Length: 239
Image (spheres, one colour):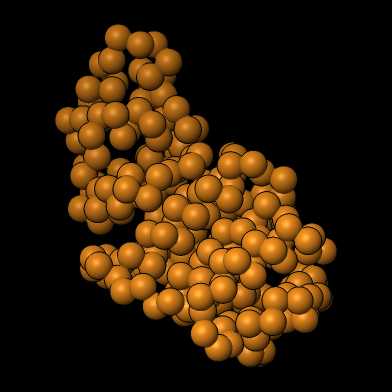
């Protein structure tokens, strides 16, 4: 349920937006759909400028609230997630132009209820999407949609997933996210990048990437020979 501070935040953030703001609500055959419906109805009745167009999806899809045609909320953006949601709505309504071209980049941010770091991870991914062409961001409630993230074996939240291959734990600043997308596209990682993946308990996912690429980089070998035993152990797990 929205609080007075949420309503005040929305009114202030959307004050300079003229006319109605139309968002899509993708309704789906899922137990969580009723919760999405309640949120959509509440926002529509309280935040006067926001209106939702309900669209039915085919079987197997998750319910979603779509902002700006590129931000898919497979999560109910209430409580601590409401302010980042309104900021995304405001940005989409003002149609801030994209400045770079990151064609075909898919980013997922897995969040959990009560996570104090997740809102900032969402803000970063949303900001990156609105600043770059061809970027789609999906925000997934890992508790509500366990079946959707089960294959990823997520260890913590927030986790940012780039093109379903590169897994990054914690809050990734927008400028760093841009670098990670470039590295993932070019398959170019420094020793420090590899160390971060290992420390984030993503050794097995790093191994999957290396198997797919069919190569072991010299940067990885330098981790294997590092003088710190935990890093060498992590590198051995990857091997």
